[in-house]
Length: 452
Image (cartoon, rainbow, N blue to C red; front, side):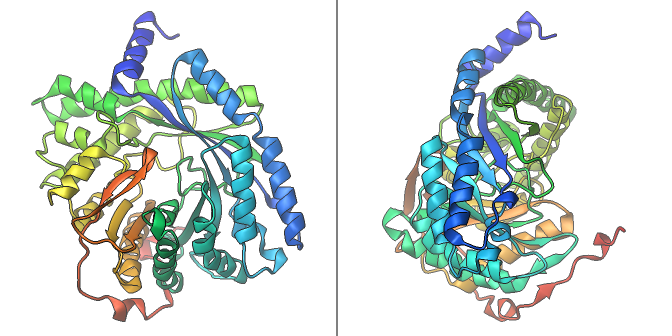
C-alpha cells in the first residue's frame, strides 16, 4: 500500500527534481513477416508494426496524465532486420529503413530501433547487406536507429566487422555533414548487447522474447542529486543507503506506470531498465551527481570510483522495487546529453581516456562523443575495439556511439538539439593503430567464458 507521504514525496520528485519515465518502448517480433520478396516484406513489417503499436502513444500519454508522471519518449524496438531480411537476397536494406521511418511517423513515436545485425561470431550476407546500408539508411531517415553487436563474453570479438565499422561511421557522418553528422548519433556498436534494452540507439527485440512486449526506462538524476545533498560529507555507507532508497522510490513509480501501460495495451510487461539517463536540462545530470558525491569536476581523480558506487547502488535499490529488471540498468554517461559533462569536456577535465575508464564500471560506454571529422577510420575502429574488449573481459554490456563531425575539429562544438543536446569536439590520440586493426579475424573468448 502506498502511503500519503510517499505520494507527496513522489509528486515533489516530479515537480522539482525532474523525475520522469524516460521511455516506454514496445518490442515487436518480426520473424513471422519473413518473405523472399522485398516489397512483400516491407508491407508485412509495416502492417504488423502499425497494428501492434497503433495505440502506444495515446495510452502512454493517457497514463502519464492519470498519474502525473511525465513519459518523455515513446519508442519501438523490432527484431534485428538482418535476421528478417536475409531471404530477400537484396544487396541494400535502405527500402526497409525508409518504410520503418514512415510507420514510425504514422504511429507518432520518436525513434524505432532494430535496423541491426548480430555478428559477434559470424558475418553472413544479410549482415553485410545491413551494415553496408547503414550510412544511406541513417542519412535518409529521421527516426530509424541502427546497431551492430560485434562481440560477447562467450564468443569473443569479430574484428573483421570492427574494421569495417570505422569506415561505416565515417561514411555516415559524411552523408549527414549538413546536419553536424547526426547520422552517427543514431548508430551504436555493442559487445554483449541486451535484447530487451528500451533505450536508443541500441534497442532491438530479441528472438527469445514474447511476440510483443512493453519495456520501460526510468530516470531521475535530479532526484538522486537532490537526495545526496542531505548526506553531504557523511560516510560512504550513508551515501550508499541514500542512493539505494532513492532508486527504490523512483523505480516503484516506474513499475506502476509500466504495469498500467502494458495492461491497457493488452501486451505482456517486459522489464524495467534502471538506468539513470541525463538530459541537457540543468538539474538532470549524471555529472552533477558525481560532483555532489565529492568530485570537484567530473573527470578528476576519483570519478571512476564515484561512478562505480552510483551504478551499484542504483541497481541494488531499484531491483527490490521492480518485478522484472533488465535492459542495461545503471548510469549512462553520454557527453552531449549532460550539461555538466559538456562543461567538464570543454575545460579538459574529462577526456576520452577517462570516459573509457568510467565505462568499465557503468552502463554502456563511450556514448554521444563527438571527435574531429578527420579522425581516421582505423582510429575509430581502435576506439571501438578498446571498448568492446572491456565488455568481453568483464562480462558486461559496452558500446560506442561516436560521431566524427565532418569538417570540424577540437575547440568546436555541434548542436543536435532536443535530447541529443550539444557536443564539444574531444581530442583523440594522434598515434596510429592501423597495424593491429588491419589484422582482422576474430579475438577468441576469454578463458572464464567456458562455463558449460
